[in-house]
Length: 241
Image 1 (cartoon, rainbow, N blue to C red):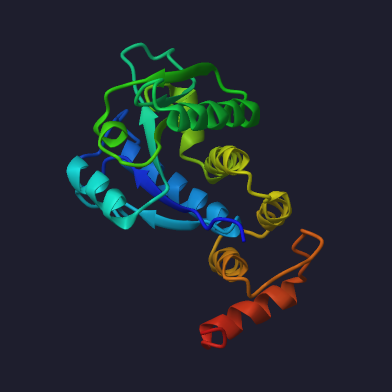
Image 2 (cartoon, helix red, strand yellow):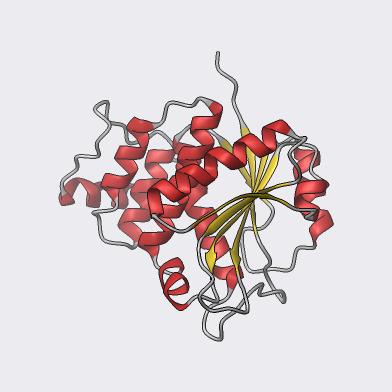
């Protein structure tokens, strides 16, 4: 039987700490949105997901790493948005603590490569840093700077569902490639689902897929609107509890 992985997802900042801002957008908001999208994809790949925060709240650095360590997470993924004084600064970079922790650095390389391939963003490479969440975790850990909130074009993209889905999918693909998980069928099914208009119907169908209630052996979600509506109504009635 293959190993069941547990991954701790860490949306940067939160609560009274907005992270980087540009006068309109807050880093903490996009970080949480991307984490939720990533979590759903990882769940489809059979990964157990835990979070350092699931809402807009204050969580200091020590509780984040303490929680991941105590929970026995296999990997720790921290999601952030970058910022710079120069508005033209752009691109994606992924961090590990140092090059002497092979798993962290190799995972960072695979995730960075997947992100650049999916987004076409400027490749700022894999870097090392003495960040608390990388230093104090007892499992391999990476921190992804998904783009620059200080860059108008990147900020506009990072706060759209479509680009967040692209980023989350790329990170998931990188993680799964590194772990050797076979998820292409599930990823295709999830991407096909994006054709359903956003809202309760899409959220319900994604949840039922993640829970294994809706399955399709050919890797595509092929449901009529009436079938989707039926699943949503049955879910409201508690039929799948």
